[in-house]
Image (cartoon, rainbow, N blue to C red; front, side, top):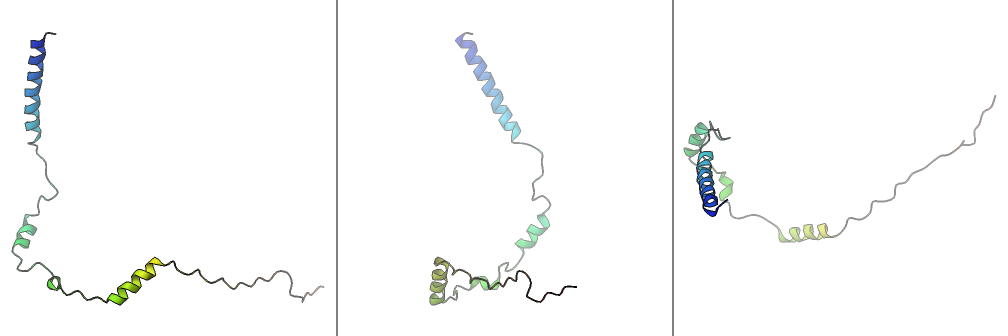
Length: 98
């Protein structure tokens, strides 16, 4: 193939590719939010949509309690106590024979 033909083919394919990309941007589908216009309008007209407690900037907390929680999480828990198990094997001495 000559160089001119190669350039012509590349130019033609690039033009077609550009048209295809533009065509693919215009497709007919529905989004997941279709049909939510009533809910959206309702939220726009809400006077105060936030929780009244969200304006509280004074977060109550105890520093000593927080330190104790962090220290407790860093140390491993103590092992559980050994269980007291009594196992009776055999007869208890009172055997009746006939």
